[in-house]
Length: 159
Image (cartoon, rainbow, N blue to C red; front, side, top):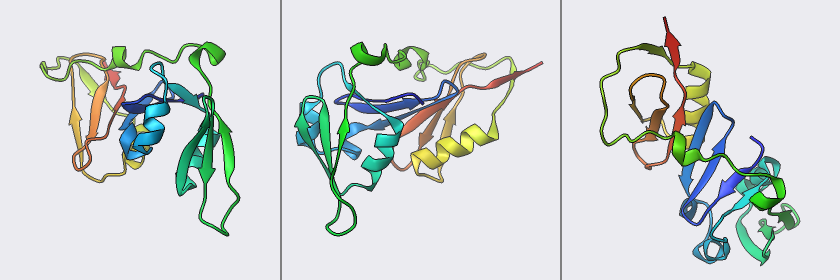
């Protein structure tokens, strides 16, 4: 993953083989979400790992967030936010997610990369997953049944 996209609605992370989508309100406060520009912001994966350990995150400026940790554990840190105009266009992740409202019967035999599925399961934080298949070599939607978080993984066509 080069960068993680935060919009007011969702956080999106992808490495081209799998994609994870989590509602932003599960990760950030309403005040911080309101500060995210319409085009979203990009966070480096190393900074995202620091965010996970923070007790609170507050906006310092248009392109800086302050990570606040529990007293005595770690000093507060600043992380720099990037814009797509700085680092390049983030992949159009919505274009690769098929319409799962109208499933069709698959005619091809497919397989899943078990390692990708396990990594996505860990990222979604759930042991109960719902897999929605679509025709052909289209992405498979993997949804955490208890939280509604979802991601997609690409199938492998079998001949």
